[in-house]
Length: 140
Image 1 (tube, helix red, strand yellow):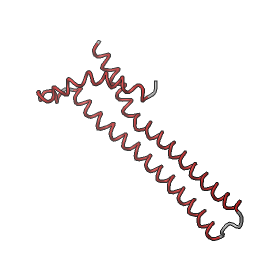
Image 2 (cartoon, helix red, strand yellow):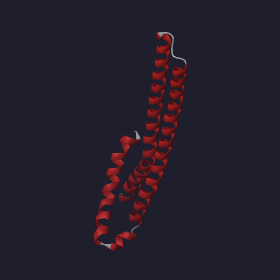
Image 3 (tube, one colour):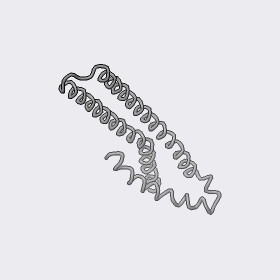
Image 4 (spheres, helix red, strand yellow):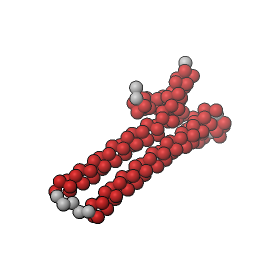
């Protein structure tokens, strides 16, 4: 089962166990000492940090890809300005190269985005599924 498909089921199991603890925290200050309460709050902070780090890497990779495209395209534009095409075939070649570079950039950004989503889900997925298994076994 994929991460995206497994998370809702695991989250449902985890929430069914933890929501009463959260509601209890409002009325009873002793709940704040419950090991499960401490675990779930610490996990959220840790998973948020891991997700932010994963997404930060994706942003940096995207910026690098865009900068590389801009540099290459600017160089091609300057070359075209310095030596205007003498024939329509040269202009077609320039346009084709530009479209190829843009297509490559779109593909690269798509790959980076897919990896970012997987990297962002991974810390949450591992915790949610592990908690669901642990909490399910605890009830038995």
